[in-house]
Image (cartoon, rainbow over all chains, first blue to last red; front, side):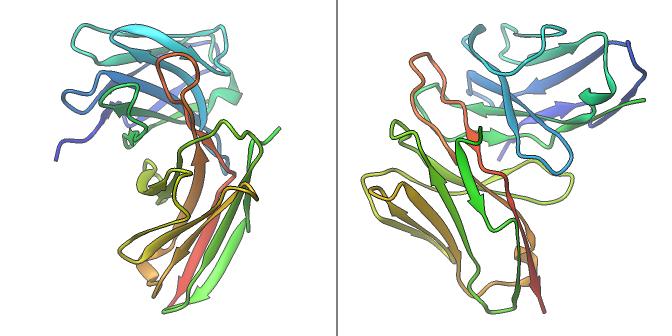
Length: 113
Length: 115
């Protein structure tokens, strides 16, 4: 079965640079969630989209922005990167917002040096 | 403030043992309680989930026990195997008044099953 695809899998950036993470949800899933997982931490909700509209926002810094496109893929844009942004970033998708099950991608490991 | 509290932080059992991981929550509006399994460097994988209208759910070797009055739920892994060694996260969710159901995770339990 098709799964959530994330790219790139690994990304190394320097402080103050910009990064773009991409997420391709499971086919026919129109709801996308982004989570950030620091080393040894639990995943923290960042932002979510339903039908290309932002539907909820968590502890996402103002330096980050995201959007969902017409093909339902989503991109997380991160600017002015800081050392503390180093983490695993997961995308999860769901068939619709009324379905609780979320299926996670393999994640993008961002390292800021 | 951790909305979902998970214990223990780590757990070591022998092969064939039954590890038990516990979670507690405060927000009575939560109505969906999943467990995720995560291997190093991988994304969390949905293992099993329960709604508060049932007290127990079993899928294969994994069982969730749910105590609504105590606001607690737990994961039991029967006949544990070394391949079960991973980090386990409990989570909770509800309809958040918008259009999505963000997950609130516990702090995770690192399980090691020794051969």
